[in-house]
Image (cartoon, rainbow, N blue to C red):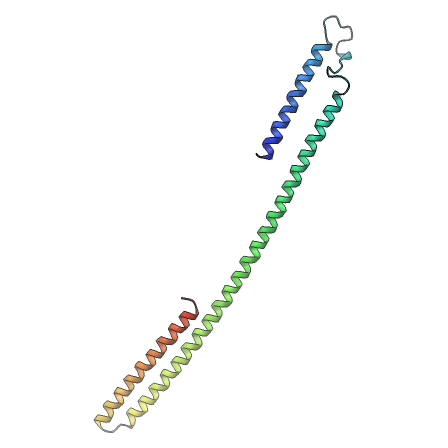
Length: 169
């Protein structure tokens, strides 16, 4: 049950009891022939009634203080949990950024290496083609150039797939 509901019910009970007691006091101590009137009103419950009211006040005050203390503790715990969650998010984000930077650097290195190999293979094939004098040798050179280009393309594709797998895609 909610603390506010308990406090409301308890307060209503205290007010009800106090009202009933007050009506009894007035009923028992005031009459038409009473010379002193309201000046001589005494509690119907006797002398200990004041102590009972003080006890009720102390109980209500203690309950209110306990509720305030529990609320303060809950607020502190919530604040601490929110701070811890924010720290975890910041750390995870930083780790993700670092991983992305590393993957991008690895991809760039793989592409540069593959491109360099392809350029070198193309240069060699071109040199072989220039060296070829006859038509047959030119055809062989063209075929070699085509093979070298295919090989370079295959290497570039493999390097891109390796980089892609390193990035987790």
